[in-house]
Amino acid sequence: MFAVIKTGGRQYRVAPDDVLEVGKIEGEVGSIVQLNEVLVVGGDTPILGLPTVAGASVAVEVLDHKRGPKVIAFKKRRRKNSRRKRGYRDEITVLRVSEILTDNAKPTKGPRPKKEKVAKEATKEDAAA
Image 1 (cartoon, rainbow, N blue to C red):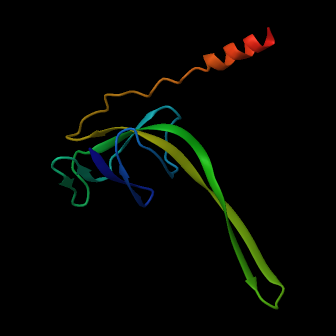
Image 2 (tube, rainbow, N blue to C red):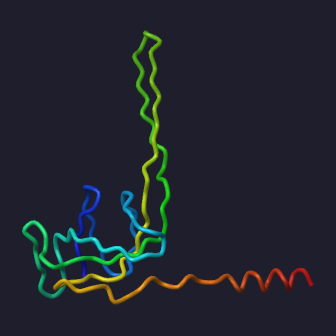
C-alpha cells in the first residue's frame, strides 16, 4: 500500500517504513504526527482524491529536526564592482511513515523505542581491562 501526500507545497509518494525529509513541521522528536492532506491511496484498488481523499491520513514519526545544506545566491554585475552574496539553510524535519490510515482511523502504532548502545560500552570496558 502507498499514498501520495502533500506537505510544504510538495508532494511525496510514501509507503510504510519510508524515511523522508520534508520542510519543517511542528512536533516533538519521537512523537507521532498525522498528515491529513492525502491525494492518493494506492493498493489493489487505488482511491483518488478530489482534491484529497476523505477520511484518509498518514501517521508519521518525527525522527529529527535539522537544517539543510547551505544555498548561496551570488549576483555580480560585471565591470561595476557590484557583488551580492546571500545564503540560507532550510529547516528540515526527518520523518518515518508508520502507517497509512483510511476511514478516519486513529494511529495504532506508537513511536519505536530507541536502541541502546550497550555493545559499544562493553567493548570499551574490555579494551580498558
